[in-house]
Amino acid sequence: MLPTLCTCLLWLSTSGLWTVQAKGSGTDVSTRNPHRDLAPNNVDFAFTLYKHLVASGPGKNVFISPVSISTALAMLSLGARGYTREQLLQGLGFNLTEMSEAEIHRAFRHLHHLLRESNTTLEMTMGMWAHSFDLESTREENFYVNETTTVKVPMMFQSNTVKYLNDSVLPCQLVQLDYTGNETVFFVLPVKGKMDSVITALSRDTIQRWSKSLTIRQVDLYIPKISISGAYDLGGIMGDMGIADLLSNRTHFSGITQEALPKVSKVLHKAALQVDEKGLEAAAPTRVSLSAAPEPLALRFNRPFIIMIFDDFTWSSLFLGKVVNPT
Image (tube, rainbow, N blue to C red; front, side):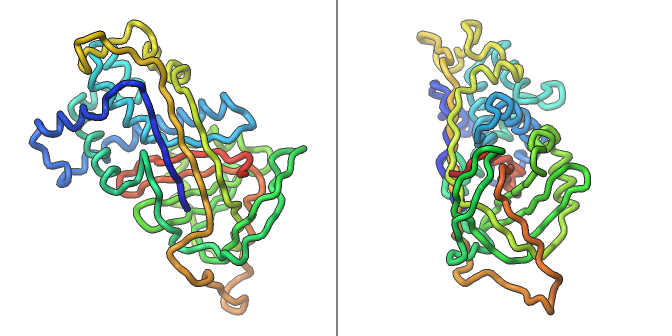
């Protein structure tokens, strides 16, 4: 699996702000884990942004890296002053009466440090599947984009014991797959015509419930090879999410420079995803004979589905996607 290249460009030079603060803080970020305090807010922000983008592009692929967006906006807030700074942090979901600005930035700095060290986000090539798909079993199959559109895709295959759930609450099935490193991925297959219902219900509570409800099941799993990307100007959506003045003349970024006070002209984000068979195991996937296990469940991702990639260590939402057409 190769999720590649995710960038967030704010058209402001802010990348050095945390570095400067870190040099003066005297805090050894390697011995602390304040990033965990960010997880609830970051996940809430991730799903809110994801739902806005899905709603703004019905019938289209959506793919974003929420953690890179929230990190970039938090970094930008370091150069903001007055209400601009407060609006940015509140738009990210923080209650400044419960978590101070210093605590927020210390946690983001630590998260940034961890993800940079592990090469997990911004520019990345992520780890191999813990259990590879059988390269020789990949076949061209139909993928049903909608009622009138069918495309041919290379459909990957593995027969293995995986974490599986047929949700009794939401109209979907899902599997959780791991790959080497700290990352894990959810593939969620809504019942035909129920994609919007599942996306509307995505939340921290839903992910926690799924994680607790997954069972180990022998599955014949078919997932298409994916090559999609998303490029967005998030300025308008940021306004809908409470950061209304980000692109206006009312913003105040004198913390970046006192000369010719800068303004944010655009908020650009781009992410790309490639999923293939590559895995840690070079041999064919483990197979279980019918005499030793029940009949495997066949699960085909041959219609629009959801993909979510999380970092287990930092509890970060690395990527969220809606795959309408994987080609």
